[in-house]
Amino acid sequence: MVRNYKRKTSWQSWSEESMSQAIIAVRSGEMSLRTAANTHNVPKTTLERKLKKEGDPQTAAHKSLGRFKPVFSDDQEMMLKNYILQMESRLFGLTILDLRSLAYQFAKMNGIQHPFSVQEELAGEDWVEQFLKRQADISLRTPEPTSAARAAAFNRESVKKFFGLLEELVDKYEFPPSRVYNCDETGISTVPNKRSKILSLKGKKQVGSLSSAERGTLITAEICFSLACWRNLSISMNFLPVECTTAMRLVSAPYRTRDRRFSHSKEISKLGRYRRQNVEHSSQPKSVLMQLGNTSHPY
Image (cartoon, rainbow, N blue to C red; front, side):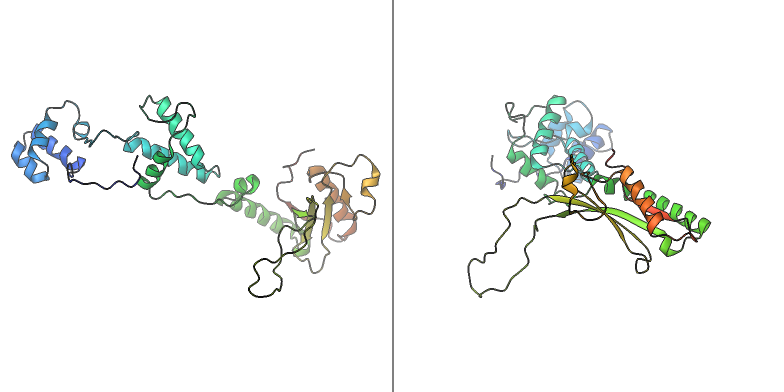
């Protein structure tokens, strides 16, 4: 199939909406055949042929040119478009291969005749290209990685509820900035994955740099600090990438290194107890600790 076909004739250049209005005018007796054709700018012979068809005016006004017909109607393609945009808004965007599979399943479930591959159960690449041309507001984009926890929590209602609870606690207990702690985890690789730019001779085709032969491991670090971090030292906790079966793995490890792959609620409780025993003063025993997704890695 030609992807960029250019029409060579002006046949059926009228719109289906104009033809539908002309059919309604003639059937209702408001206009004669010739008057309706001239008023709505449609061919008289074509209007006469469309009037002989039974059914509603929209169906009778449908036009087809040549033996190639669209697989889906405009309403069906709009359903596919809305589904694509809905899945993208939920961070489950469809790829081209997903769209081809979706089009085949949609045609099969609705009993629509199609030229798609039955063996591969996929729509053709030509259909995808023509579909994207008809739906010009859909394009192929590179998505930005977004964690499920942040996607589920970062919305207007959740943010408003969070700051409302925080404001209620601060007003009730009169927490100073040094008693409001924020705790979050991050991943640190033992092998750098991004190279810094170096000085070299201008015009040289290839500039090399020694790289580590190791694949690199990910170390999870839990960092906790108060809003007045210039007054209170930050607290950190490290997690090894494998579970320790012997105590030898923790030899020469940084202080408060745990033998777990990720952080979880039990370790967060230990971090809170350490903060109360070693950082906070007895004159102000209460504080608030904010932790993002501390139940994402249960134990």
